[in-house]
Image 1 (cartoon, rainbow, N blue to C red):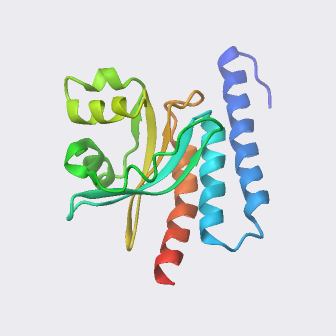
Image 2: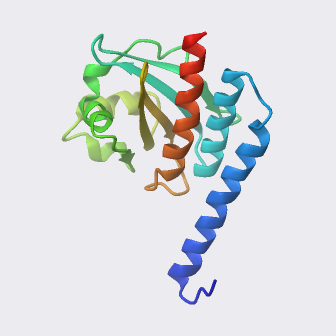
Length: 179
């Protein structure tokens, strides 16, 4: 591969990081059979790839209007929010519903920019100290929701890694619910 320009070198570097992250998570979880351990490993890999403080699975039931963090991985020193966010009012997140319906990512580089259009969502995240999010939707049979990374520092506008790992997560969520 001949990379001449700085842009081409950056793209090549990002591709190597992407492949390396996928290879690491695959190697770490290849022999794992416990669904919760697989989901936690995938969340850790996502957080590390994006340089994020937290990664979580948010399952949403739009008919009931409730969202729940079912799995979470936090970097060292980051407070868990899983127990605090068990009954999120999904009416506060209309753009998330639209993103799920259209299988589109959520890319929010700065929560302050959301205030004019989505003040409830902006205030919700600001209350928990989250300044930016990147999320990929998933929807498969009995599970709907998002894989979310809080405050990513790398690849902040590229949800491709989240989309790929969401397939593993939703597979394990379905496995858990079917048991």
